[in-house]
Length: 352
Image 1 (cartoon, rainbow, N blue to C red):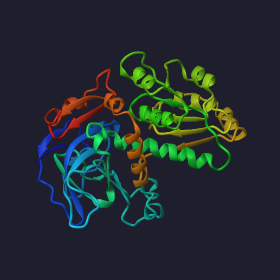
Image 2 (tube, one colour; image 1 turned 120 degrees about the vertical axis):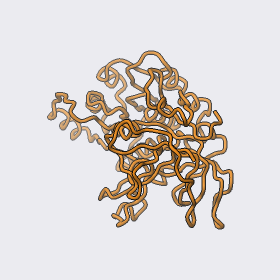
Image 3 (cartoon, rainbow, N blue to C red; image 1 turned 180 degrees about the vertical axis):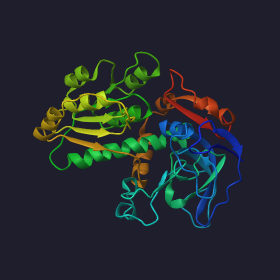
C-alpha cells in the first residue's frame, strides 16, 4: 500500500512510499484510510525539527488527524464494517504514570507517552491502518467529507473543558469569548463558543480570503485591529489563544474581565523576545482572580465531545474550513503554504 513517510530528524525526506500492508492484531480494527489533515506539527516533522520513528523502523508514517472507514472488525466488537472512524493520537506511557493510569493520558506526567504519526508509532497517513478498539471513535456517517477535522476539534474541546473546570471553582457565567487566531484551531474554538450561545469574537491579521467570512458565517464577529483595542473593547470572560504569538497572549491577558480565564493552545517559537511589565501582569492576575492555563492534546473523553460538536455543526461550513484537498501522490503540495489556506488535507482513497 501507499503511505506518507518521512525520516524524522532529516529534512527533505517527505515522500509517498510503498509500505507493507497492515495486519490487525488481536482486538484491532482494520481501517481503510480516507484522509489525513496537515498541521504545524506535521510541518515541523517534515522540516526535521521534531518526530520519532518507531523503534523497529527507519521511517515514520505521518498523519495524526485521521479519518477512515472500517474494513474488518474482530469477532467481538462494538464497531461494524463500514463505520466512519477516527483514531486517537496519544497512547499512555507503559509504566504508566498516575494520569495515564486514570485515562488522562493527555496529561502524562513523565513524558513516556507515544503518539501516532508523531512519536514512536506510525501514523494514519496510509491507504489502510490498524487501531485498537479502545483508541478509535465512531463518527456520524454524514461527516464523511469533514470528519478529518475531528482531531483538531478534540484540542479545543479539551480547552473548553478546562474553562468549565476552572470556572466551576466558583460562580461563573461567561458571556463573551475572544479567540485569537482564525486558523483551524481558532475557527473550531469559535464554533464551540457559538454552540454554547456565547457572544463570540475572533481576532486575526488578514482582511480578505476565507477566514473573515467563515467567522461571520458562525454568527461570530471578526476583528483584525490590534489586540489591545479589541480586547479592551470586548473585555472577554474567556480567551482561547490559538496563535502562540507573545504579543497576543499578553494583550489578551491584560484586558479580560474580572475572573477571566485564558487558555493557551498555541505553541510559541523559541527565540522571539518581547518586553512586558511582569509586575502589572502579576498584579492583574492576582487582584482579579484571573487564570491562565496551557492545554495540549486530548484524551478519549475529548474525542467523544468533539464527535458531538461536529455532528451538531453545519456540514457545509465544516467543508469550507477545508480549503484544499491534495491527492496522496502529490503530498509535497500539501506542505507548500498558500495565502488562502485554512485546513489542507491529504486524500488517501482517491475519491475527491
